[in-house]
Every structure is written in C-alpha cells, then in structure tokens.
Length: 137
Image (cartoon, rainbow, N blue to C red; front, top):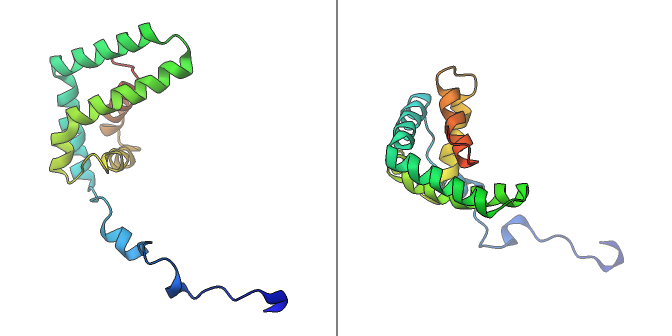
C-alpha cells in the first residue's frame, strides 16, 4: 500500500444493487428450442401475411419514404416506427413463448440464431428482418 493508496474493497463490499451473474441468468429470457423457434417463425409469417397487417406496414413505409428524403434519417425512422408496429403484431406469438416487450428482441435473436444455416427458416427470418427495414415484399 505504497503512496497512501488503500487496498481495493473486497468483492463482497461492492454495491449491493448490482445483481450477481446467477441472478441475471435466472431472470434471463426463455431459451427456445429449434422446434419452438421454427413454430414461432411460422406463426410470425402468418401474422405478416394477414392483409390488414401487410397493408398497415406498407402504408407506414410509404409515409416514411415520402416524409424523409435523407437515407440515414429515413432508415432511422423505419426502425423507430416499424419496430413498435411489428412488436404489436407479434405480441401474442412472442408471449406464447415467454417473451414480452422487454425481451422481445432476445426472442428474435434466438430465432435468427436457430435459422442460421437452415434452408427453411433462413428465408422466413430474412423476410421479417427486411420488413423491419421497410422492405415489404
């Protein structure tokens, strides 16, 4: 303890507000099996293909494209405005698998991970990700 420095506090003296890794892991999102991810993805595609949902997304994309001409601003608004719409559309599906608005993207990421290298899931996942960017096909 040279130059008057004090020793670091022991680990147990750190902030009691910080959750431990065990606590965070226990409170983490549900883990989807590949079969569950496939089911959730199929349900999501059905929701996207409903004419009313497709129409509202297409209308919002058109509105954003007309309002924002600068590419970065347009892309930012696509994400900011389409994400809540997509989350609302897929809420029931994601809740069924244990996800909510707080961990929705964790569920999406799990589905994407399961879809990697899967010939059936890959194109479906890509379709949803493109929709989030305003590319409604």
